[in-house]
Picture 1 (tube, rainbow, N blue to C red):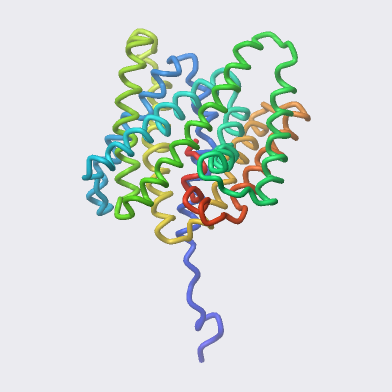
Picture 2 (cartoon, rainbow, N blue to C red; picture 1 turned 90 degrees about the horizontal axis):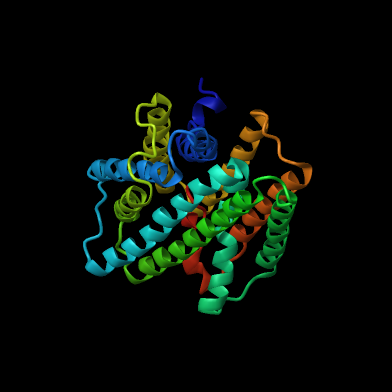
Length: 320
């Protein structure tokens, strides 16, 4: 005699595990990156993250039945967005981690939804909903609390301020890149997003290699350090390549709305990890982080207008 449990189909946990894998990996990446600061300069480290990831993504394209862009115009969109979402974002984010600390960098770099709402208003004339406006106010308050609590004349204040500014600049770069990708999808709906992401890494990674070796040379890294190569393996193979692949795999099985909701946990994971490791932020800074994360979630989940619908999706939150 069959029971009710026998008749119920088994719940498939794999989509949730896939996106959770990406979220946890990206949440841990900032702390791992911070640990290598004494072994390599930020630009060198960033290029070592992006270039191998590009090659790995390129190698697995056939397995995923994905393809690189074929149209020259799509390649132009891909190249420009790659400069913003790989070169500018990863470069600024890595420098921000070294200068301002993992917690600050992750939270501030997770603010692209704020910039997307504002830019959509300026460029497309999109109406800002009350929910989005409330999220903007909440998030802006959180950012101000983070900045004000950490720039109170402490030693190394200039470097810290530069790190905080770079984290926000990285977020702005990601936001502009997202708008470009969304516009590309509107004009060329046949594009393969995995292929576009691979193309972004190829272009952005190549530019990072040129800039890093031109600005820092090859003598700025401790190439004999085992710790350096372990961390490079994590941030390139695990954080950039593997987490990106599990993210897109989850996106095939879950709605974009569901995947976007999960991504809000990435900065939470980063902040919790810092606390567990004993790097507890000041109370006002911690409150600012909480407000910023909440503001990001509110803005990204706000109802989109017809015009704004082009700009909202899982690409709205960055890979940290």
